Amino acid sequence: MIRELPLAQHPLGDAVFSIYHTLNEKGHTAVVAGGAVRDFLLGGSPKDIDIATSATPAQVKNLFRKTVPVGQAFGVILVLVESQSIEVATFRSESSYRDGRHPEKVQWGTPEEDAARRDFTVNGLFYEPERHEIWDFVGGLKDLGDRKLRAIGRAVDRFSEDHLRILRAYRFRAQLGFAWDEELAQALSQQSALLTSVSRERVRDELLRLFTAPFRDQVVPHLVKWDVLATLFPGSDWTVDTYSRWTSIHQELALFELGRWFVRSMPQASLPDFLRHLKLSRRQVQAALAALTPWFDLHNLQKPSLGEIVDRLWDEDFRAGFLEARTTQWVNSAAGTVQRLNEAWALYQKWGPPKPDPWVKAGDLPFLQGPSLGEALRQGYWRQLEGHFQNRDEVVAWIRQNFTARAPSAG
Image (cartoon, rainbow, N blue to C red):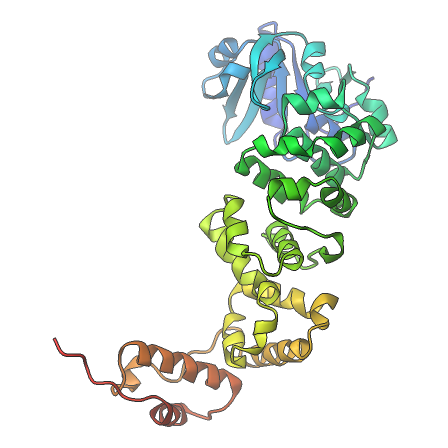
């Protein structure tokens, strides 16, 4: 098939053409491979562009000044062109997968063999950029036209080779909105148990990509029905009716949405343990805990003072979860919660942004020290935000009345 793809207009286009021409000049075949071809054909702009070539890893390293052997045993070399980096992989065949991920045997091969080792037909396409040729050895073009996700070869074989492909099947449907073909769906319904061998880091990456994908609603019922989440998180009991999309835009959208579903499915379970199970960074855990407080501590929003809730609204992550909670029907079913959320939001808008300074600081309370001083400052500030005081003197007077002075401990 002849069709010119908008490779030249892509931010990585110059780097790709530079690598392509260098390989071609030395007599090597070079093509754009996999997901980038799929995305171009669907009218999108791929995030990454990979090149497949007949050149061996050693030849690739000799042809380019700056390279990184990110997977040399599997024929993958990262080529650096100015500020851009492109993965260049040797055409290969694979066999005898030993651990549900890595093949024991890798042989340099032909474009046909390289396409045959890939997961789904829509990811098995190549593009020859100089002649504008689409190379399709696996029926990917027809499946793109039919909006169908189909395995290359037998689905059960593809999954037994690399168990993560099970999650990738869900993620690609969530991204593309394609239907699974019957054989692929059948294999998915029976092979979730293989996911126990997949590392938490790989699971985390796939789930976070899945839960930002536009068509994720299509796969949510299958994640529950076919025990995907129950397998990934033993002892959990996810339910479809407790899932809903997170509507506000945020950099941690996927993490917040997945975490909220966990909390709503298992309100007595430990959200921190769940987040740690995903091998998240400390920053991600803190962001999720802040945003999901209105969910895992929903009824306890009646316990903190209104000022404490307002104080937390200057935390971007807590504010994201708070605003989401105000617009969600599930929260609206909790008696008194919506009114309290609305009162807190009104006070937040009254005071800022920016966040107001406390009228009273530690130096204004020489009669207190230690834990009593810290608690007095917090409580005084929260009551300030609630509008109980007109000035600093009123705050100090209230603290004198409500907090007992403590003498310094001996020694």
